[in-house]
Length: 186
Image (cartoon, rainbow, N blue to C red; front, side, top):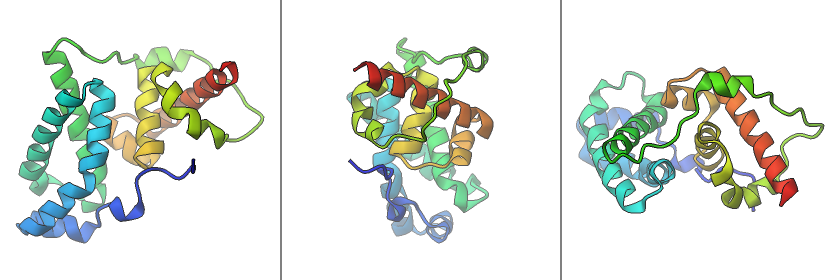
């Protein structure tokens, strides 16, 4: 399996497409929504763990995105903005259904020392990622999914989750350390 993120460059909406959609071009809006639909569905599904609930939340998320697109000030942040809306809506849905995802308090995560490794990222981890990822603590799991599966940058993840870029980096480091230990045990 390749170490390249699942999201392809052509899946990332261009700012011109966002601008056209903001000006009322329905064809551009359809293209824009189609460009993020699959990645948002995977993200929501990973948060809720229920495909049917994820479909409902995705539909509501897409409606919110289309209604509030005019409020987006910088078209370059469309993906991060869409992920923020999806994350918020999924968490609200989980709270309403009493199956709220377990989210680790960032202060607890900062107290856990990250294991120093001698080698950089190991490509074979990506092939085992799908099997081992559910065992990673939720805060790191979300960041790992968004970065490696959806191709979001550290800054985009920080914007989407409303955390600092430093926290994103520490959660990635912690999550990768967790994965390394899990793969070595397995």
